Image (cartoon, rainbow, N blue to C red):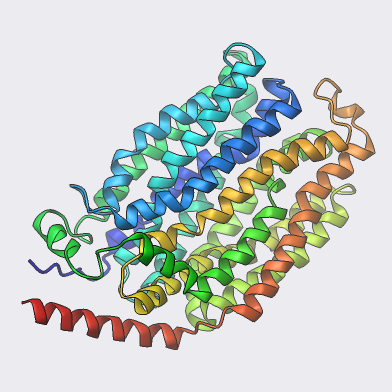
Length: 468
């Protein structure tokens, strides 16, 4: 039974990314507040935090290729190859994320529970996130479709910050009047993870009809392109210089920028004006949402690579300016950050499109559909960054003389400089390396991608005719 994918519909196009909207709430809770929760709320030892979180993220990083390979190689389940994982793993994300923000028993036991659940929540969430990300290749029929879908996804992700900024951050303080400070973070973890689960289910509904299910899925699984093994997955990575290029740059960027988001929380506790924190996130999200919405158009006009370079270059310049004013003016920091967000929104959306182009190259090169692995590989740099955050944040705080019992008003200049170093100067170094690697190393043009796609279509049409 031949499966014919329909053209990209308005429902699929506009609702694709809604689970990323919900994911952003969870990610913001983790990125901005997990380290703060462990250091300032649970008040666990810095060395223990570094060990527990870095081991959790290291285990998840090692497992990432396995997760993506499983999705690529395993036969489709009842709801399709990708949509099944999005549907089934949501409840597991809720359970594990809630336990990550907990302090149960002694310090040692609390670190064990939090660290183990941190690994588990990232593992289960990666299955849903990678499968959702791979829907770009499932829904799209061309590079133009991929650019639009990547733009929609980025738009939804950025829009979450507008609600998060005032729906979550101010309520962290308000909720402490009715529950303990520790319980507040556990409660927020529960609410945001349940919301993510529900939006995953909306995504499954919106993408219905684009993945073969039932007999059509079985028939497609028997085709040469769908019979994927470990060797095929390795070839799709190591015989794909374009994928290796952007992965290498992203790994280094994540390595150096690991502590940036955590540093923002410490910045507003020890340097900036706390009441401006939600405003910064709100304005940044508004600008980023608008930028992401038009990112697809920019990518179509100047090419995805050039759009990424434009955003990265402006982000580097803006980062230097932010670092120079961070200790002098909170307002100037926010103003410069808004301009920076406008360009970074263009970069982030079009980077997804570049991975989509790498999918086409991998299929042309190997004859196999390893799209889930290739698209999912972009989470590897994220995982490495999270692992490094578990090391860098406690390390830099320790070197800066951090003491959770010292009032923010009494913070030393050494500590303030450490926060700025972690939040800006290190990420600038990583972003600069990434820019140079992408500029000189990524040579896959949209014309070549279109040519590869035509050859793939011709090969697969000939295969279907031979087996008819």
